[in-house]
Length: 85
Image: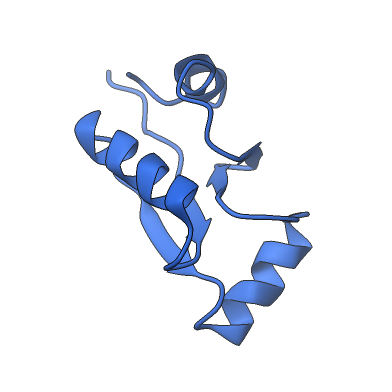
């Protein structure tokens, strides 16, 4: 039986180049995620802070946090969080 993927949330801003790169990377690898712009939504910004966000992008995979965008480390970080790549 196939294991259920954890929920993936990308906290980003519209002007962030690393956010765009991470979003593109996830789309290329056909990884489903929900994107939340922390500049446009006060509640989202509070959630972002509650999760320890200090800068964008912040990727929340289940309860695991991945800060920033490092394409060399991202596959192993996602696998550790339970995402099939």
